[in-house]
Length: 447
Image (cartoon, rainbow, N blue to C red; front, side, top):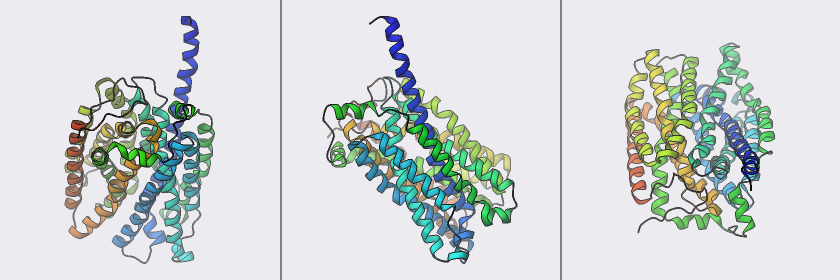
């Protein structure tokens, strides 16, 4: 083959990879938009709309419990979508997950409040939240695999990072639309019915996402598995063969990122408005600015991981999260807007150091034929233990102690556990993040 022929062949391949990376980013952004929109509404609106008879603290706990219901459902979605993602392909499952998330969010915008239909209002809210959770449970690992398995050698972390960028992008989109909607109408109108508009917009955004997602090609790794007749009948069972020590250490290593992120993105909104007197629009803008920094820094950190390996970067990032958690709430408690912005931007700078590579770290744990099931198991286990419970635990600690000190200690403990878990994980598992093919088998764990 001549050099010019090779060049012509490489161009479509490069274009196809870029299209897949952008499609996974777009799809993940839309799914996280729906998920974060709920979190913002839970912190600021749902206690009044669906739990009006409860005290402010009890209403906040009830609203956050519905937020947690989505996390309880995510492992179900992860297991179901993981199984079929390893059996019938990544692309089909990602299309279904996007549909579930969009339909669930749109229906939330149509649920009458408690004053209209009584107890059925929170019941329907939880039901739609469960639908959201199942959909996102299928998205989390699947989008990362789809992008990473298209990656050229030496760019595995970069490609796996594109779906990770969907997390802050979805947060920016959700907060931006939420903030815009609340700004163009009175507080009473927004609290009464205006909050529904961002949820109803989901159906439009999902339609756009489906058009993009349907145009991408199936993962080369899965295509190879089918061609070689190596599709696993029970992928989750085979995924467990990597050993429980490695599974548990991986869960522990990524636990803090989820707990800290959801405390910062969701609980801080409720805490800042109810206890510190910050304007809700200021807090939303602060979180959004941090998310922009988070989004922009992911390609930088993933390139560092591809060039120099994940180990040092991930451990340093875990230590940095621990340090910043110790000062985050004390900075907010100054009630100084400039200092509060610094607190938010610090989170936006530090969280992506570990978040950007956790998808590729998890995927590297498993061989390609069981990678979707195994990755979903680890990811959803860490998310429910970390992020799903974090706003509820933080609210309960705040109510019990009357200050944010208990919340700071809670985060510090979780961060310490994750730091120790990451150090132990990289001691028993070599850092395989540089220069390897995307479907190489994971390194064995020493006995």
